[in-house]
Image (tube, rainbow, N blue to C red; front, top):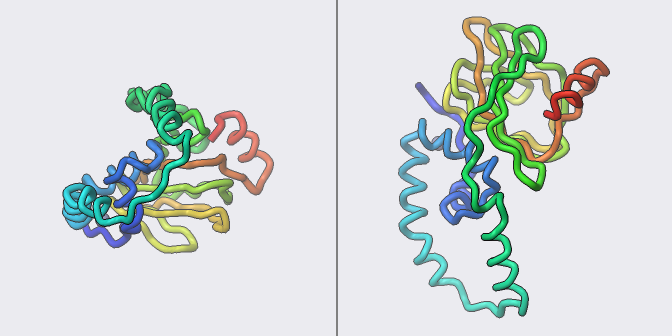
Length: 195
Ligand SMILES: [Zn+2]
C-alpha cells in the first residue's frame, strides 16, 4: 500500500489536541492507522502538545469560559463514544452506506461502498467532506485515490467519484453538511437517506 495523500498537519495537531469534530476525527484516525508517517507525526504532536501550550503567551479568559467548557464536557456528544456500526442501507446500483456517527451539530460519519466501475452522481457539499479510502480506489476530477489515502473536499468542489474497474471501493466519510446532488433523482435519494 502506497499512500500519497495525507491530512494537513493542522488536522493532525487538532486531533492530538482533542479539538477535531468526532466525525472528522474518525476519518483522520482511519488514515493514521494505515500511515506510519502520520502515526509518527501524531505521536510527536501528542507528546509535545503540552510543551507548545506552555510556550504560548498567557491570554485572558472571558468570565463564561469555564462554565462553557464544563457544559460542553457534560453534553451527550462529548460524553458518549461513537455509535456501534449500524446496518447497511442500499441506495441503488449496488451502492450502499452504513452510518457510524451522527453528531448533535449535524456532522456525520459513514461508510460508503461503490461497486467496481460505478460512478456516484455529480454533487457538491454544503460543508467539509473528509474521506479515507478503506479498500479499493476511485478517481474524480481532483485525482486518483487508493487505499489509505486521505481526501478533503470543500464546498467549492463538484465531483462524481468513480470506483476503479478492478474492485469495489469502500470509503469512510465524514461530512459537516449534506451533499447537494445536481440531478433530481439522486437528490431524492439523498434527502430520503439524509446523506
Ligand atoms: Zn499520512
